[in-house]
Structures are given as structure tokens and as C-alpha cells.
Amino acid sequence: MSPIFFASIGLKVTLTNMTPTIIIFAVVLLVVAILSKVIGCGLGAKICRYTNKEALQIGVGMISRGEVALIVADKGLNMGLMSSGLFGPIVIMVVITTVVTPILLKFVFKDKNDTSGEIKSKEAAEVTTSDDSLEYVPGQDNV
Image (cartoon, rainbow, N blue to C red; front, top):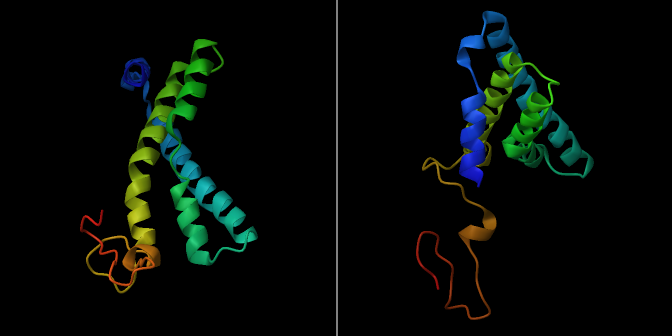
């Protein structure tokens, strides 16, 4: 059912209604959507005593808006609470935040000394069991 829902949302977007004012609104909406998640969730993480780096990672991880925003926008459009001209920027914001989140996560999780671009954590780098001869090696099947 999800692909049908997303296709129906995409069919409702009319790019011909995208005036320069609406395009500016879409850009501002996108910037506010990204910054509000990074700052809001990052501050929440700082209150919970996470480090600055961890707070940034949490904030960036929360950027994606996903299908909840699409459902709310679709209901608002169907009930006449929102014009079809404003529906396009919301869909654009949801799509861009969903696409940009994994890319930004790769940057905020990248270790300064790592040039390979792979995300590494202390737990994944070296996990041992009670038997010292068994050791987790990243990139290998360790079953």
C-alpha cells in the first residue's frame, strides 16, 4: 500500500503552480525544516548530557520528515485547509530532507583520522567474546 500512497501524493503535486514566491517559500521551508530538527534535537541531546558531536549526530539523524508530513499535508489538502500551491513545497521539503539525511549522517559520523569514508564505531572495531580466539572483524562474515 505504501507505493500507492506515495504515487498518489506525487500525482497531486503540480509544478506549474510553483511561482517564484512559492519557490522562495519552498527554500525557506527546507532551511527551517533542517535547522529546526538539528537545533531542537541537538539541544535536547545536550540537555541529556551528550557531547557536542553526539548532539549534532542526533540532530542530523532527526532531519528526515518522512511520510507523517505527507499524510498531514494530504489530509489538509483534502479538507481544504491548504491550497494546492502550498502542497508542492511541502512534498519537496519531505523528499529533500529524506534524501539529504543519510548523506549528512555520513559526514557527522566520519572520524577525522579516517580517510576511507566508512563509518566506524568503537563497538564495531573490536568486539570480543569470552573466547579470546573469536574476534569480530569488520567486513567479514563472522557467523
